Amino acid sequence: MSDLTSLTLAGALTGLRAKQYSSVELTAAHLTAIEAARGLNAYVLETPDRALAMARAADEKIARGEAGPLEGAPLGIKDLFCTKGVRSTAGSNILGNFIPTYESTVTANLWRDGAVMLGKLNMDEFAMGSSNETSAFGPVINPWRSSGSNAALTPGGSSGGSASAVAADLCLGATATDTGGSIRQPASFTGTVGVKPTYGRCSRWGVVAFASSLDQAGPLAKTVEDAALMLTSMSGHDVKDSTSLPVEVPNFADFIGKSPRGLRIGVPKEYRVDGMPAEIEQLWSRGVDWLKDAGCEIVDVTLPHTRYALPAYYIIAPAEASSNLARYDGLRYGVRAEGTVLNDVYELTRAQGFGDEVKRRVLIGTYVLSAGYYDAYYLKALKVRRRIADDFTAAFGKVDALLTPTAPSAAFGLGDKVDDPIAMYLNDIFTVPVNLAGLPALSLPGALDAQGLPLGLQLIGRALDEGTLFTLAGALEKAAAFTSKAKRWW
Ligand code: GLN
Image (cartoon, rainbow, N blue to C red; front, side, top):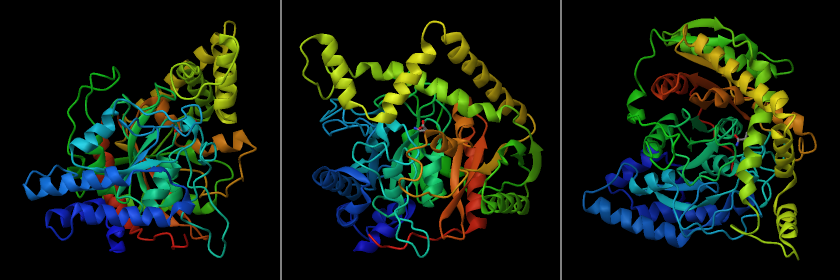
């Protein structure tokens, strides 16, 4: 039965409706796979009883002919999403054994459409990181290894658990979130497909906040079609999130298979950075050729403020984080340290509950927002953010989408960058500008490098034009014909 886990989400849904297997069988196969893969540390909580109960309910709905769009499909949920009655930690000790009394809108949408929850997935603490090494639960291991090596590689972050679980067939798809690259970089490192939709496409309600003006939920999936199916369910206006957009959600899968002929694709020259491996350059050129062959017109474009994106992000994101994380005071949520006076309780709880990277961000954020520094740092960063958004607007006057690499390297070794925050932050050089501008972007696997590790291509679109990204990604997926899977060693 274990081959049920190698199905795509779309394939599994077809089989379920044709009654080739039940959701209980499909779910049980995944639970067995998860148990056998605990060494990857992808799940921080397995919920087998809930999964099987949801699967039984799904089977009854299928039998009654009332199946929802994702009926019976077992998924993994990043532990940043609050799940009612199920421990939700955001990868932090400070939330302790926090059990939400409510369900995030995105997960509620998935359950409404019939999906089954297998468990909660590991992640960097409060989604701050690019390697899943800031998690209070320890790092996630990438199922991919360099050829001829047993060294443990990172699946990327912060959605490392989601990416590893999808790549290792421990779920049919997973939820993830992206504040500066946390869906797309892990997708690139694990040979999976990740979509960060337009800011406001998915509700942030019930998603633990990191940097509210940048945070977006999206899917990590095995194929472009699977990502489209998940995103259609996850999206939608929500009155509980004032930044959620009151717009119709198209059926994103309808855009796949449409001809991209005539679309204009921009190649931004600023994304050619020093020190990027030649193989990533080559894949980028191949991507350009694949789209040319599909009838697209390629246009050189410029995004002149790109080099200011990371510095601006590392002011704005910590500023918002320092404010959002003020709520973890030892009184309202999670763990509480003993202290004789109130200030001691606050200080000890936060000193013991937060990890080093989170503390670094709270310190930076508090600094850039403080009187005297606000104008010099925070306000200036907001102005840079506007320039970056304007660059994209100008480019989208000439082109319909942009094609870039997703990340400047393949998956790196665990421990390689933990002592060098700047090197870690540089991972997001191609992804962060998109969040600052609120645009949609998609990462899909394009090729393996000489070490046998996956490399991703990124498509960036106009606001609310995920549809064009799915059309282009469908064409690229076909041309790249990337079918490699991590060789099973776990
Ligand atoms: N790696 C980036 C950071 O550490 C982005 C993380 C994210 O997108 N959540 O902030």
